[in-house]
Image (cartoon, rainbow over all chains, first blue to last red; front, side, top):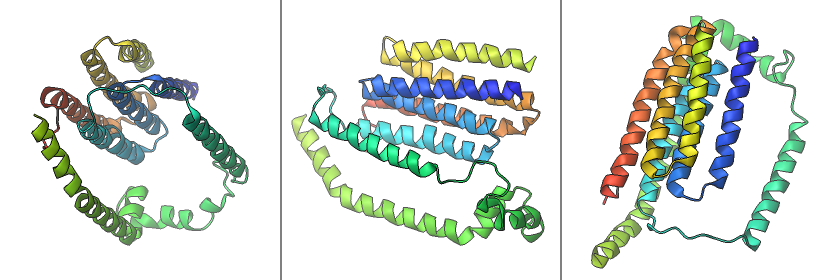
Length: 188
Length: 86
């Protein structure tokens, strides 16, 4: 028990340290590498909290795909990086962040406490899923049976939406990308 | 026993993190990020045995693969300047 607390405290401290350094670094490539490291540590945190499937997703999406997507975007950026001094725009951003986070923290006081038995989430459906999912569907893991079977149409719909959004972005951006590469070729 | 290994991993993680933040060239940082991935893979395996649930080792295999893909992507970007879409 104490070992678990120490491990979790260590991981949270690490994540906080990495986050502070992500804010402080000025080079884009260091930021990308640090973000990948951050999500790896976050995934380890999820493993330690026994949420293995979430850790799986975090590792493959957070550390794998988004790092590669950031790198692909980086290859389109100019090589020289420009420093921006502290100005009015930053003050607006700080104000917005403070107000929004204050509102969210205020709203969080209305939530029920984490892990209480009488919370609404544990009252009606969860019991049914935990007791019945093995006989209804035959998959030993409850989370897998909820995602793949009870919520099968949901997941299918999400996939269709994301696929359509990807096609739309490709159609919109394809013209611009080919123009940029033409300009780059003319420069060479 | 497993706790000692975990502590050793934590210490080496901190040392590599210092390198990742203070690294002189970009390649130092890439190497440090890759090593952190390796430490995480080891950490998940040892953590599984420490908590008595060693079936989580498959996850560390997935992590090792993802870590490899990420490092190859970074190195390809530095070698070619693109990820192969131009």
